[in-house]
Image (cartoon, rainbow, N blue to C red; front, side, top):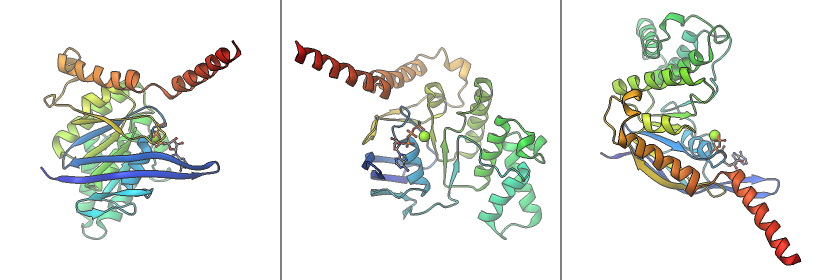
Amino acid sequence: MSVLLDISQIDMVFPTPKGPFTALQGVDLKIKKGEFVSLIGHSGCGKSTVLNVVAGLYQATTGGVILNGKEVSEPGPERAVVFQNHSLLPWLTAYENVELAVKQVFGNTKSKAEMKEWIEHNLTLVHMDHAMHKRPDEISGGMKQRVGIARALAMQPEVLLMDEPFGALDALTRAHMQDSLMEIQNELNNTVIMITHDVDEAVLLSDRIVMMTNGPAATVGEILDVELERPRDRLTLAEDPEYNRLRSEVLKFLYEKQRKVEDIGKHKAKSKATKKESEAA
Ligand SMILES: Nc1ncnc2c1ncn2[C@@H]1O[C@H](COP(=O)(O)OP(=O)(O)OP(=O)(O)O)[C@@H](O)[C@H]1O
Ligand SMILES: [Mg+2]
């Protein structure tokens, strides 16, 4: 299968008051149509920066992103983004929030009836049809995330970008959301990049897990292929040896090969102290 999204040798250098800061160096990733890829790595390594470059919100310092043969230079509806905290307009109902996005993408190409049907269809996909005329302050956090996902799906993006979409939810709601995302994926086969901190979530949902090294100058460390059969069921997988192998590969990468930033800080402080001690001796 051919490459749909080509993230090619991206460097990202941010200007800061203390001088230039290299967040990403040589990030290279090719994604095929219909692939579900997750990005995992310690906090601050540069996952959101990668996503923001793909979204067109940041321009890479060097390198670039090509989607379907066209270079990405600004945000566009063919790359819908779902953020960790819902970004719904508080004065609009769930239905109206989706409608706004659909109108932006499809303009006048759909009739009133087609428009209504399409919005309702997408809200049904995320099981929000029963509350579609409620405003964000009248629904729970998980429900708001569902609306955010419905809004993104309704835009029929070529790539769906999700930055920790379930990060703010409790474990049970999160599991429900993962299950519905798998159902939707089963039906629509979207191309997805999802950032997560959750190892189980990454293995459960992905076709590939991209593990990033710690910054500064973070890059793709290792890539793990997840070839577990679909549909996947969390309970069955819990006892599956391949599932557990993949899970421990990710854990090994994160906690053995890439130590936590705080640990590196501690290590540096310790080795400085040891150096001083030995100098004093
Ligand atoms: N606009 C910016 N200006 C300067 N530095 C930035 C900017 N955006 C991000 N950075 C820095 O780049 C690095 C990567 O940040 P990024 O937000 O991509 O990390 P992350 O992996 O998404 O972290 P988290 O898991 O905590 O969300 C961090 O050191 C951050 O401080
Ligand atoms: Mg982030």
